[in-house]
Length: 112
Image (cartoon, rainbow, N blue to C red; front, side, top):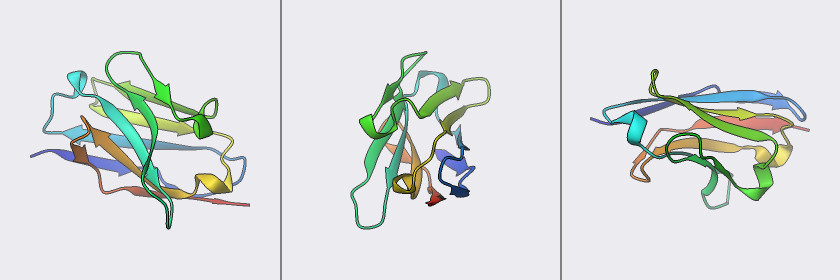
């Protein structure tokens, strides 16, 4: 049974930082492509960052230079370090493995 459990969301002021974590089980994490998506109210879910395998990372334009995705294969965990947060970053953030399995999401709210 595959499980992805996100944590680390919360309320932060604009300009602040948060680190999201997603712990995976039931998959071969080291060979899994991991991604973070987000969905704001009334909007479609959008890709935020990808870390397919190894050190390659890909970011969407709105977060490039502010967010950093990383993975710890020993801990089966993927992280999203978010800095210089903006109110428009407010959304539910989801972890995704192999574009097949999803976590339950964690709310990030950035106040102005």
